[in-house]
Amino acid sequence: MADKKLIGQYKNYLKENLSKKRYTHSVNVANAASKLAERYGGNKEKAYLAGLLHDICKETPEEKQLELVKQSKLDVCAIETKTPALYHAIAGAEFIQSEFQITDTEIVDAVRYHTVGRKDMPLLSQIIYLADLISDDRDYKDVKKMRRYAEQSLEKAMLEALKFSIADSVEKGNMIPVSTLECYNDFAKLKNK
Image (cartoon, rainbow, N blue to C red; front, side):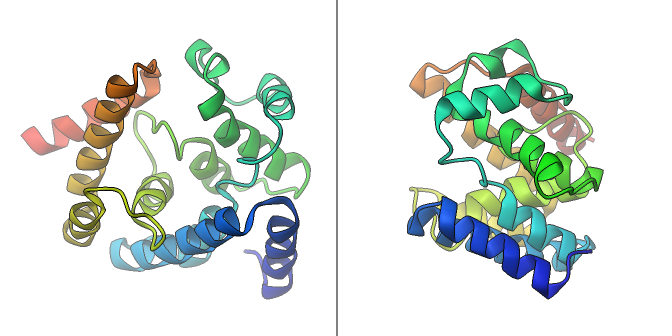
């Protein structure tokens, strides 16, 4: 796993390439992810690293993000290639592999799916998805409720987070990737068991 020196290098890169607000968000997500990993039996170091790097391409120019999306060998659906707000997760996963030589599939997957989720979502990916929604800098209307869910049950929190995300997308008139719906269905099935 990444040592303190590498983490320092990644933080320096983020400081140079993200706004102060986005950098703070990245550190907050890393901290929230580490806490969730500890609570739910995940790897704290991987959670911290994936949380730190999850938005690495968020402020990269849109054209460069799309270029990385098109280069990606990861599974990318047509909706994602037509939705600029979703580029950064795929671009980020591609970037950390090519520029930082991070090949750990759990970390790459967590960065890749932190915006859309996916079927059979691994633990680390769930942790990053939730940490992004509940980090200390978040202040949307139901964030306190989402934080409570995250303390009670990972599955319940994921289901509520997906409901929130899908409803938000519908309200904005955005398209919803199939992977998001498959992810929601997985957690809805768990609830109904």
